[in-house]
Length: 217
Image (cartoon, rainbow, N blue to C red; front, side, top):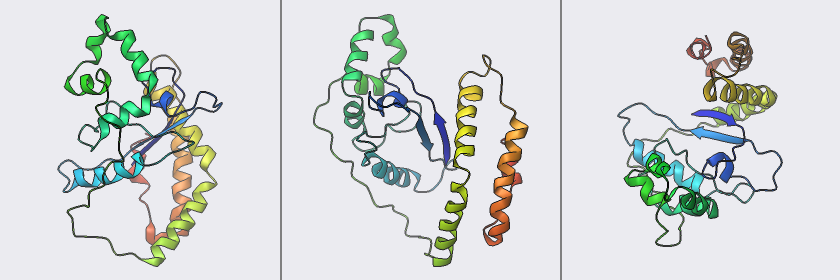
């Protein structure tokens, strides 16, 4: 899973804007992306299950929304779900670009249906399909307990991780040529130290630190 914190946006149809209420003061948005290997068996069923759970959530009364550039078109009920999530902002955006050349920038078969057509029916909670895979990992109480302890250990580093991903998102991915890049070597040292701490406490669940090093060096 890829996780990143993003700053607020005033774009009408940006998820980082639509998932917050107008009166909120701290409008930071957590972006989550579940990734898998190409050709992964049962990937579509698996991703539909996850999406169904997320689409049923309400955080501070607001529903999560998909990133426009990611895979979501095959999800059950997603078109009306998006329209309901953006509400009046989507209608305002539509009016702004409907008669403008910019309309072509947002035009393909899927976006024409989602952005430029009204909902045909009230959005319903998406149905979660059971995975076709019959193989399930056995539940191990020891692993569950260790996982809970790891989460507690990682809680000590929440602010460090949050600062890191906010900086990475704002300075490296968003506008890499307009602002100074972060000290990536220093950030790797912080990350390596956290992984090393976890590995020492839970050697049987050891995470190979070098697997992550290429992300930072």
